[in-house]
Image 1: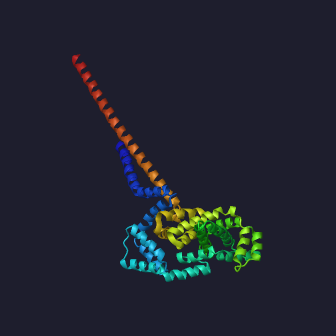
Image 2: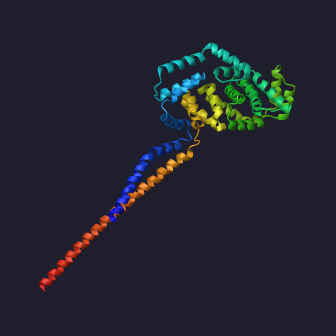
Image 3: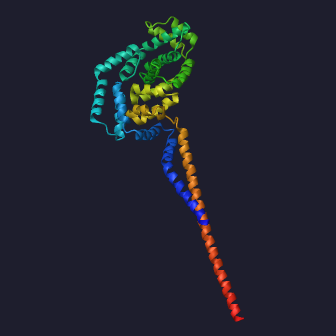
Length: 378
């Protein structure tokens, strides 16, 4: 029975040790992810390890998809990611990506996309963004948006108050840009991107709600209605002054910070990267995290966000599973230590029992010898 109890304890050590060996890698990874949850760059690297380990062709397949959708910038972002991760790519794919990037950077392409952004006010790459920002810097774009949405508001029609608010903020920032000789231009570009993302339906639902609330706070609706009633794109100076009078600059700080963060993303990832961020962001904190990610990861940021989505920015979904791995590892480690303790106690008890039995046997032999000697002497 004694050896059975020791054998049971040893079996517990073996079982817990085996289970811990299986759980430990997952628990270590979960712990690292939890530790990096406030650092988007470190968090994305850890998650990339898992994603790329599961599918060796993931990068190549995404490059093919990006080229098929004429997104040379995204394809090149995956090439940068592959290079830094030492992932081999076929020469023909590298050549196709290089040719596509050259085409997007050509003078004719840039001029065509610049004109598109200037006329339509829609941006999805660097060239069209340059045109859109140029239009907004000359206040034409913002006045066009304010007059259109303001008249909808005055007539009781469906109004995109977010576009209205962003355009009003944009007019004030444009004035600051002129006064500061371009110092506020980065904010101007960021607000333009947010406005464009809203127009084309690429602004995340959570971020859109937050920005909509912020935009309502910066516009005096009755005063704006009076301004747009007599406003016109053909009289930009007069219209801009009337609209700016309805703008509460002191309440625009949150939108200005958002514009700065969007610009920081665009500086590292381009206009499309900023659009990707605005699509997955649920609030301004997500955009701020994306700016930190872009600063750290540079050209491969778009590829990271394509693979991980919002998970590149913070710990979303799977947190419960990660916690389970940690809990399982802690429970198994406790079982292992308990089994070791029990084994040690039972082995020690067995050794003490043997010593006591040996000591009693010697005492009995000595007592018998004494009795024998006493009998002989008698």
